[in-house]
Length: 231
Ligand SMILES: C[S@@+](CC[C@H](N)C(=O)[O-])C[C@H]1O[C@@H](n2cnc3c(N)ncnc32)[C@H](O)[C@@H]1O
Image 1 (tube, helix red, strand yellow):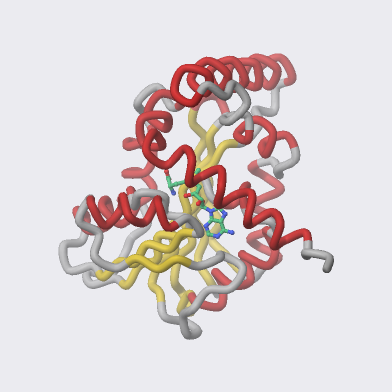
Image 2: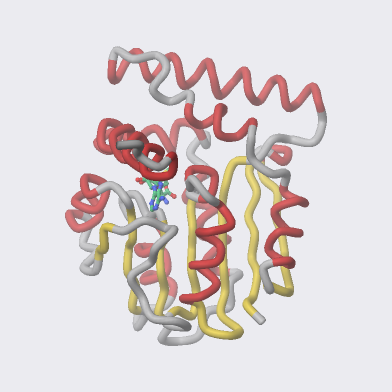
């Protein structure tokens, strides 16, 4: 029997994140020169969340966005959703009470439940970005927010080459050191090469029915934050 490509992708994705989960937070800090927490905080603080928001942290990993939203709005209700159970186990260990193991392309929530959906380095990994965006839009209430932080390729060609070189070298070094597998972290630059630019992702959000799309660039355009409101 032929297994659909999306199912194969999800299976490979889950296996990879299962392997790297115990080192995931450390690697994120290393790759971002320790700035990842600040970027995520900016995403939360500028979102203009209501006092008691209901928030989805999608592709949550160990749940950074849940933690930051709860710090910012103490009455927030947050739920962490991820494909990889091992990541969610770590999230629960950090004190995140609500975790759901699910695929971004099929979210087990009713329409319009969330005031905000936060996604950290997740969109690049979804087998179908348009399917996931459709689901995100469906579970967001009208006027609610999408906030995404992700890697992008810098527009300048020289910077782009340097950035990819940096990501491959760092990935190989830490992959070898931590797992004996130099290629395990190359999914970051690999997925980045076929991903959209910051501008194209903004256009995609507008086409999806989002408005007030705002962006902020970090690391000379190597990292992008998007905020967008559902119409
Ligand atoms: C790079 S990590 C990001 C973790 C966290 N959001 C952060 O900001 O550090 C990507 C996460 O996406 C999850 N993931 C990959 N494909 C997914 C999918 N189709 N649906 C839900 N989660 C997915 C992985 O299991 C992994 O935990």
